[in-house]
Length: 155
Image (cartoon, rainbow, N blue to C red; front, side, top):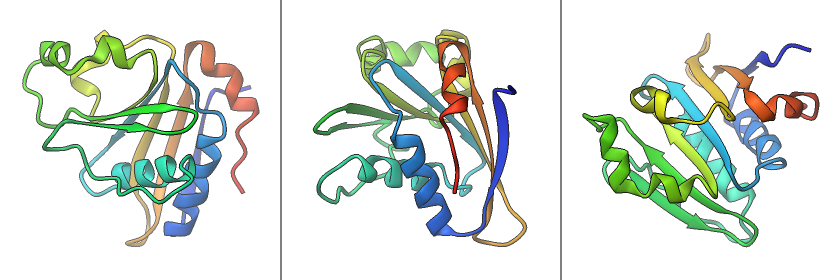
């Protein structure tokens, strides 16, 4: 079975459903790498994902300027990074990344640090769709997460 697949999200509600489906198998020591141009939905996806795991509504802000937001949820701790403003990959050493890898990690703009990431990760690429609210998504399950592809269903 192919570990990479593509889906189209036609509206914001489908993005919410997609995030909820991903949240069902999140666990500690899991890294999600989120690629895509500015405005393609990476932070919106993270907002829906984090809120689907929370009993109360959380205001999930973009970590572009602080670079890191941490969410202590009931069953999972999520480290939400945005490396857009990093100039040097060694800067992640000052951001407790080694500690974060023990929990669930979301990384927006991971390109600069790819060679520092473990091979066990999930890669999600966001692209603009055919209309203003649609998105094309490419998902790849890498390393030990390849087995999750069989569990993932989008409806």
